[in-house]
Amino acid sequence: MEVLAELESACHGGNREAVTPLWKGHVMNSAGARPDPEAAAAALRNSRAAQAAARRPRALPIRYAVAQGLLCAGGFTALGVSMADPEREGLLVAIALGCLVGLLGVSWSGMHHGGVAPWFVPRGTRPSWLSWGLPALPFVVGLLALIPYGMTGGLIGFGVATGLVTCVQGAWNQVRARETS
Image (cartoon, rainbow, N blue to C red):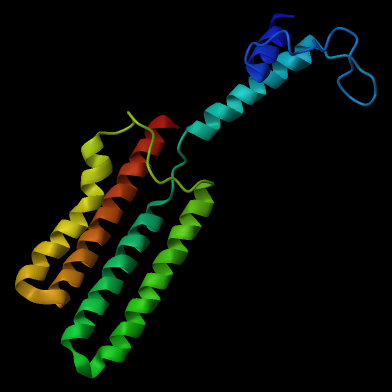
């Protein structure tokens, strides 16, 4: 009975007046069977195990992070070099476009593998400088390279820094996922 009360409390926020208990003559399924306390306890254990498994990060193979980093660096580098080399501009823009479309494909594949598409991690799971500072690093590098080298240098700096940050974040996430598994 204690398990059923806990299930009732979890499902209805403890509002006992609005809830008619299942064990007082109501049936649980179409066959007319009354709820079994052991089955309810097993269902509660399974539910808690599923919630714990959903909260635990899954280890994504490192090849995803490496591929994302290389495609991002290659795409933005080709885009930056295309501005400096008008003779091969069309080819370099096509290469950049192919790399960046590939980056989107690899990113989608990685999110599909993990089952989720996280944007920000829950508070307290890593330092705030890592959540905000590391993603801002490519923009800072790109802006610093933009000053002396123009748009070409800015795009190349942004692409290479983004590629490195993506690899670092992928390795960090893989280590963290293995520690919690």
